[in-house]
Amino acid sequence: MTDARIEHLVTSGQFTLDGGTWDVDNNVWIVGDDREAIVIDAAHDADAIAEALGDRRLLAIVCTHAHNDHIDAAPALAERTGAKIWLHPDDLPLWKQTHPDRLPDNRLADGHVIEVAGTELTVLHTPGHAPGAVCLHDPGLGTVFTGDTLFQGGPGATGRSYSHFPTIIDSIRDRLLALPPDTVVRTGHGESTTIGAEAPHLEEWIARGH
Image (cartoon, rainbow, N blue to C red; front, side, top):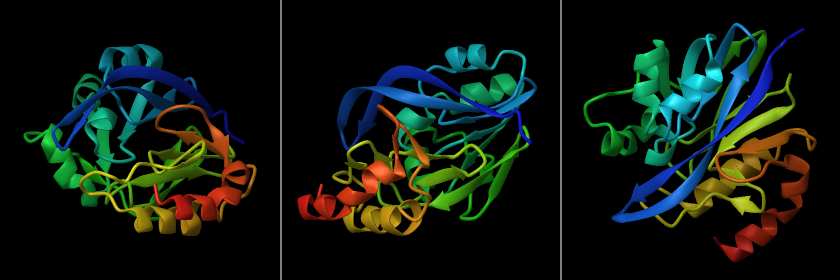
């Protein structure tokens, strides 16, 4: 039995890549109980995330990928809390564009299990939006945190450096759509959805090639 719960924070800032900059709102997810927690994607505002955590022990800062809008507050939050930053090593080139002087502390790997507050999140390596993109599946909480791999309405963007459309389609088909249909998809931006709501549209996305 777990007392773990999911908390949601929206932070605002900018996404910068390939010479362009866009204003974005990011979903920050906190999983834990009254004693301990992890943060999934420390975006933009370390102060707001720390305030939401309160006096809980932060066990890990987990990065779904290394686009700057998902990691820009990670070092400041790590310094403030003592938590380690976790990133898949395939995303180190992207990470270094934002934080050239501060590497992540630990490496995420497919199948790795992160334990917090009596619940377990399993790392699914889901490249495509970024080479080291991961999702975090928690069957106990009936959810998967997909970062920018899968949104309500389709795959994450693949039109910029380090991204690849056929790869993200493979990741979604093989890793995410294999999850139970009622699994709640908690995304990096925008509204949540379910695996069952998105699965019927796979062929449409492929035809659209977006």
